[in-house]
Length: 43
Image: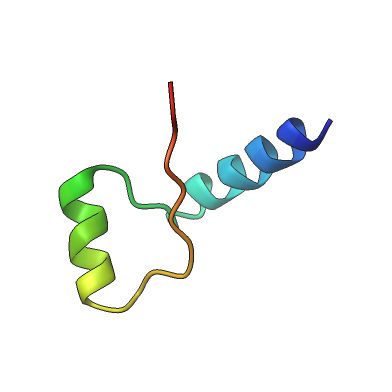
């Protein structure tokens, strides 16, 4: 149940274009101090 809520919030954020994907663009956003949360997926 918790995973569904998290995935739902990630989906909403993606539709609002508030998510940044990829190592290079995430690194640049961190340098620009625009990042509030970093989520790292593990296989």
